[in-house]
Length: 142
Image (cartoon, rainbow, N blue to C red; front, side, top):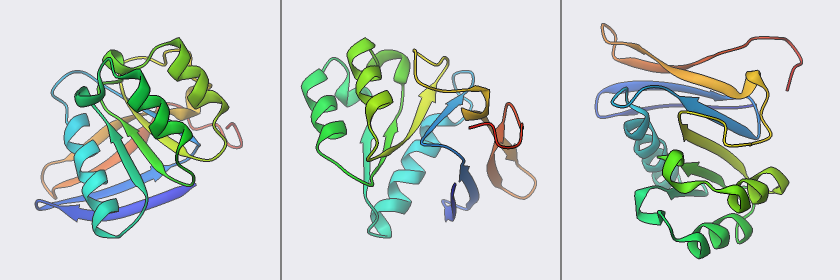
């Protein structure tokens, strides 16, 4: 498990990543892309290894492949995964033992993920805090 607590643009974030792959799903406009960029900014600022694959990588399988195979101990954030992931990229992610992933989208795409890998954004506007709420909380189910 990895926990990241940080503040960005007046919001407090408490992001617990329980597995090698965390899928954050939800409807359009609920803040997934905002969180992806806030996480990237936090990692860059703290000189931690991070890569963001988003609409700029759309249909650029070579760039995506190099990002996955050319890194180790790196958080790879995939935003708008509905547009980016295909069978070959999913296979690379599933077989990657060197990196960890946060995948933003609306389905699992064949990723090696149990229900305990799926989370949604939980926002409390009154205190300006965002955290992850996991879909399933079965102890020791990874």
